[in-house]
Image 1 (cartoon, rainbow over the protein chains, first blue to last red):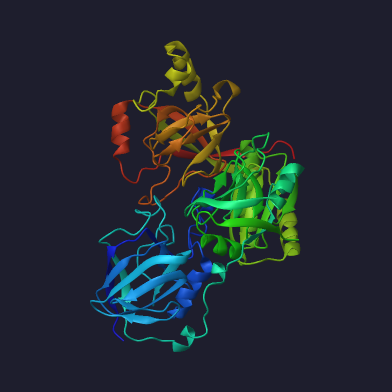
Image 2 (cartoon, each protein chain N blue to C red):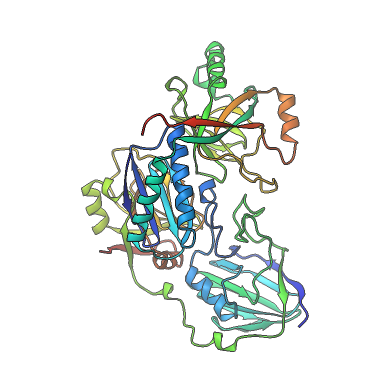
Amino acid sequence: MPIKKSFCQVLEPGFYTSIQDEGRIGWRAKGVPLSGPMDAESFARANRVVGNDTPMAALEITLSGPTLLFNDPVWVAVSGAEVALTHNQKAQALDRPFLCDLGDVLRVGKMTQGARVYMAFLGGLQTPQYLGSASQFYPISPAARVQKGEKLPFVSSLLFPKIAASTGETNSQSLGGRDRLKVRPGIDWEDCPKHIQKELKNGSFAVGSNNRMGYRLEGAISPLDFEPLSGIIPPGTIQLSFAGSLLVAMADGQVTGGYLRVLSLDSQEMNFLAQQTTGKKLRLDFED
Amino acid sequence: MTYTLHFPQTDQCFVSLSPMVTSQVEILQQQHWIGLLGKKLKAVLREIVAEPRGFLLFFKTAYDPQKIKTAIQNTWEQTQAKKHFIYKQWEIPIDCHHSDCNDLLDFFKGDTDQVKAYWEAFLAQSLYVQFYGFLPGFVYLNGVPKALQLPRRKEPRLTVPAGSVAVGDRYVGIYPQVSPGGWQLLGQSPIALFDRNRSLAFFLEPGDCIQWVAIDSNTFESLKNTTNLIPNHADKEVVLSSS
């Protein structure tokens, strides 16, 4: 089968669309965030559905999506939040592989439930890697996100290798209508005063401002009366700010931070949080 | 020194150290320990990140805590046997009269004698790399004498220029990119701490020593326009005096 390098052109980039692979592993000791998908489960599913054996560079699309014009045939799949996806103005189901051909226009509309979808390409996007990863994060990569008019490279192919991979995949677990977030004690939990521990266990929170760096959870937590030292912040860490709100470090979160690391989320809970939008009410469930 | 283990997630282990790691030789010892652990756990480990209170191991998937404990204890015993450590000493050029940095004049309320005295003491002081954080390539430099430690600005700046050398309490930092920042600006370095196009994207390692070299604005401009620039450096040795 001949290999043909081709591309799709970004007619409209959408609200915030970036290229993400599994992340920039091995550079955190130099202050470089991990990056990678916010909802790793939906990212992996889009890749599986489109027939990639391992997760490859895909588009992470936030709140409202891009419009793409294809220059050659390639298999595509979209997974994650609920969204109107149109292929040449005809509705296209999520979690199914489909062929985008020369001259086709693919449009991802506004999300109706959830915040992020992933558009995977058979063979992955062929954009350049920086420090071993195609994930966009400025200034490690030259741009933070996909730009209008940009050409996104892929390897064109009409053949779909794995029909079986497309069946039986369900919608994202992360979208579920639950209102509890499962948490574990963070690195500094023991340094957290008892009355604040109690407030965290009983408090209710609302999703505040959020982006790829982090999610703010607004609540009524008493401020700390001491200033913690700067330390490592793995993604999923929940820090308690001086003002008493919770800061959840997400994919592009800084490697270090200066607040108390009171709690921690596992990857499944991060996937769930990545699909929540401003105003969502949450309570915390403590594991163990 | 003693350590305790925390497991914030099943694929993470934080090795908490007491007392904190703050001297240059302690940092080199910690780096040596991390190096041994990295080799021993290579098959299951993603990366290790250090900070003054310890270091965090990131595993590829959930990993057996008992195996972690054994690996940490064994490598700690090996580390304690090592007394001689090699580090690099770097010459970092700095322009103290750069127009972008006038916090000292503000801080000393226009008293140019005090500003001059601060600069002289600062340039004579060698510092060492504690750890990276905040931004890609941002190093926290330790070894700042009490007299040179300045409090952070009351109002952070929205934009600090790339290359700014600044002091914030106990640390000195060099901003690798334009960013907001609350530290007091002391000067400008033409050296990029991170450059994705340079053969060595980052050149400083924890435990490395840096010495300042005062430069004028002409030298600043010519170094700023030099590509693939790595500052002068030499290998040095330090010996751990007691265990």
